[in-house]
Length: 158
Image (tube, rainbow, N blue to C red; front, side, top):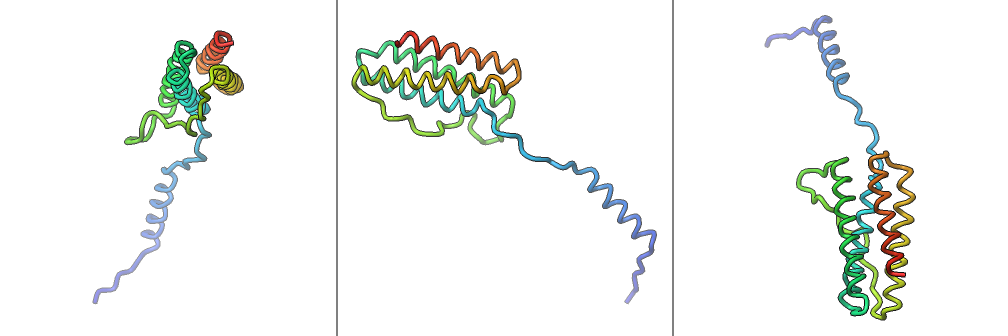
């Protein structure tokens, strides 16, 4: 049986190699906070689904609710695309997130349905307006456009 001796020099070299290896591995740091545009996109998808349900159920609001559905769906697409550009989804993950909650039941009576749409647009406008000050300028312009569109749609419905 052969005896293996470990020299001090071999120990120092192993320790230096281990230190060099750990120095090359950067600390990943904390994960970034959730992208606020993802939540805005989810709300836009839910609003679009609700508006489409109203357009189908309430004949008197078919045209304006259909327009709200179309525009809010466009908002969802644009906001989600920007969120995905900023933080690409992991491979295999869907590029669009499902709505965080299922759309609220929509009223079938025209006045109640109109009020429902106006309240949804007001909530979307307020939430997006709160995000504007927290994002970089190039994103703030896009979110500002969403705010303006929600305000315009609300005025058309009123």
